[in-house]
Length: 433
Image (spheres, helix red, strand yellow):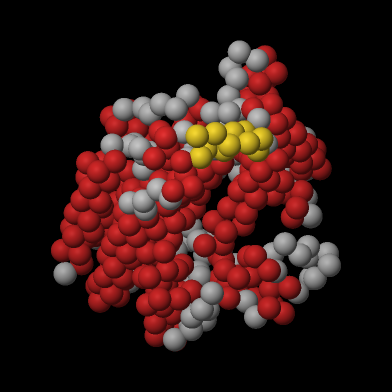
């Protein structure tokens, strides 16, 4: 039964991609970019685990069938919602396009990017400097103040503004220098720190923004080949995270098959375990973990040391709280620090069956942002890129990983776009999209 469900899930991902391409012919449509991630997470991974005979060492066939059924319903809701959002008709007011001041967009990019670079440098210097930080496994700078640690994301904000159609200025040496400076830390963090998140962020930011800035699209073949290469690079980094650092003498491992070895930290196995434990214990959070990211997380621990426990989500401090009470009793194994259960398991632990309409709403939001980006441009183009950037966290990690990053990336961008407004003009072309 599980094998049949996996094949149906594969067919659903493929069908959604075909419908999106035949309907919109846009390689930057969310379904085109996200469905392969779903396919890897919920088709290829369980198939490999079944094929090597290790899946049932940790989970039963019955548990996997129940989880894969939820996966199928969740993906169907997301794809359906995305297609509905993509078909949102243009509003009459869209016939007037907002005009933005390119200079203000670039200044905003320079200033926010510089602030992010300064925060990143502070964390690295506080940890002993570049050589010391990246001379160790999974090197990363640190500060006890979360605002300083997370401020490094403003470098991505700066790049998004500089690579917007209004901010793009390849002939300006200052613009080029800013792009190089703001890209460097994330490339260093991703490649020498062997971290998937920063690697995905910087490569997709530069690659996708390059085309959006010039109002062009790459070919479908190029996107598929590039996406596959990026996927292999991220797996390569995972397999060599203990070997990659400045001064390392280790021989790098080119075989990525070890990524699919069964263990408690495997996303599919851990996700199935969390899903099963939540169902059997009846312990769901009903939005409380996600709400904590908005209400509680912004308050520094120096001011409120026990903030998550006081809010009633003490579990959130380990693995985003996805492993509910009873995991070890029910599954016979406990969670591994740093493990992630993936989108379906995380949302299920939060909302139970209400996760299906919730993911339909998230899918609609993705489609709506895409529709507004192609019909209006401006800040919606930036929001589309942010949505795609966060998709890797959305699919493979947790709501926690998405919520705070979406705030950090989108709010400063929106503020700059609002400050750059300078009027309206009649543009009938906006109605044609």
